[in-house]
Image (cartoon, rainbow, N blue to C red; front, side):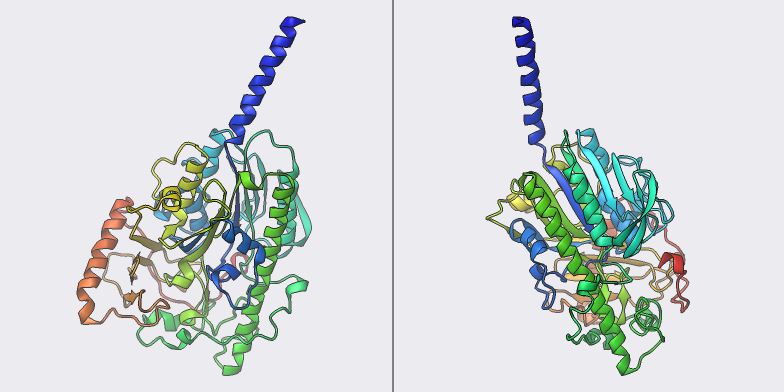
Length: 492
């Protein structure tokens, strides 16, 4: 009996030690939105969108006000979030390539560190594949974009239509998973469809913004100093006079009264964002009720930005700030106390997320990542933080409305050029913007002779940054020009 008591005490001690060890590892929740602009939240100062539950995360955590994706396209950006690598390095350079799971990545390294891993919602790497991906213990996803209503999901191997509104359904799946018993720290990504096109609000938000007038942005009519491809794009799938993701039934249409179609589209975009705020409320409530809130790193973010009429464009892909700038909000009391929220103005990238989370979780860092952890930047400041980074996008035959893009963004300047893809000289006018004095990028200064030295300096900076990121041989498709045909219905 005495020996039994000793063994029991030893077992309890071991279990207690295990529990203590686990308690030092935070849970990780990423809420990943699709095509969410950085400025379309209450905490970002939007004049019409009220997002109190998302705002709460910012008011109790860290709000990265200058966060960017390095390729403004869903699959490449999502692969960069997981791997900490540029698109040319991880290889997902379009929306039709599978994520190469053999490379070091965030869920793989967290799993090695003892985490239970789960993915729920929109994955969108490998257009027609909803099969369970490696490194996830639990999996719920679907093929392609999914639908705002009644999407067919693969629920851990069983395919079934889950009736209802996507944002609500995905949130319920996530809260149900959180309610399960977990004997390990956990990592969950909730991939929402919203606010990706076609913007379809749920009924309660369908008419919230009916009385708010939305004109075309003034930059849509300031194209004289822009490359010709901006004008060529106006009447296409990605232009303001085109179908507007089916909000305009008769197109192309450049009549003044057709701005009403544009307004309806923007109202729809705003409406689906309100449901995201409801989702955050439900998730936060579940974490609070289960006592897990303060031991969970909550990341709320978008995969890329979105052009809502700026420079006459809709969609993304281009290097305009509206396209590349994203929201990133992180709530975790051990990163920064909830009564001392922080706003970080340095430029952080999608590439930095995985290195940062792995650092906070004391997990193995990623080998060969292009990003770096922002933990020191948040907690102490970091004088060595980046002053510049480069952007890459490759022309897509499936969406032939944007050329190859290579550019560099510093804290004060942006230089963009459009290589043809065969080694010949660029055929499109390059762009140069003074971000300090022209944050809306209204005035292209590329032909200003007084700025030749700055242009040359930025070109050198771009070449150095690309070389440092192992992009010594920059391969890209041939730019076949802006085309008028609509994309295939299955991939829109």
